[in-house]
Length: 364
Image (cartoon, rainbow, N blue to C red):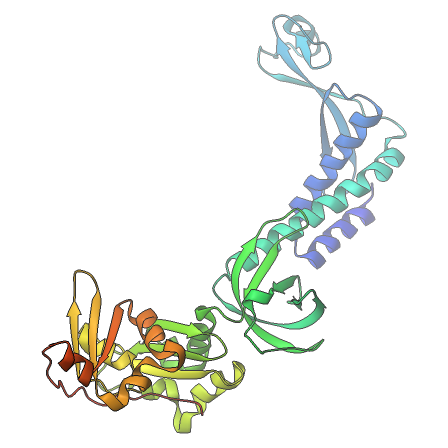
């Protein structure tokens, strides 16, 4: 090799973002492979490369032993001390065996090994980069559409948006830019696989974190998210600072912040409610926009019975049970909703707790 080749290897490493040591290790491994293939497969071989001049030397390594069982890898103490009287049992004798025509053979054989090692290093770096970004949002360009799968170009790698991770009714064209949520980064033979989603509740959470400065600063906290992608979501928020309107911060001036998120999710309706440590108050808030008269909780079983005015029953339950279902997901409680009439018929005692009106945002 030459100084020009070493410079080329350093430039390649810089271009690919790979440490020069990794490139040199790949070259050394390639030269060892080339030597064993052409000159001595049974020998222990070491290759030393001068990082400045590019000169390389091949050495056969022999373990110093009392009794030689394999003359390809071992040397007796007596024979070793003929070369250097300081050798002791257990040390290694290195003998240079660089062939004259090795440079040409090495160049031919090593090329594929070097390329493979560089590719593996690149894959390792990409995996490390994206595995650290799990549960984060990435923006990419639709590069291919195959069998209802969208393949998204993220720059260094493609991500896959499968059919089950797509918002119902949502479609994209080639070269559209799209925001997705990294669900999982998998190691595979052909390189890392990035699995992304548009339906994951984490997408909604991260969108609010990016859009609302108070959340980024830790002044407002997202406590829980419940989502039925493409239709409706509920988000509970909280602030320790009584002077901060946590719901107002998420909605923004004239609804600007939440509207940006609704637009990104193609019109998905969003309810923003205030979290409360009192489960009764929290459940009443979660059933917004319905008015709640009373909430009776069973702490042990984490079940709640909710009484609503007769005219609010259908609103509390929601279309096909969606509002009640989302409220249950948001709070983590099983919720049984009854109207005033049903409660009276069943002999259930209740009081009108006069829960304060819950602020919410609905995109019509």
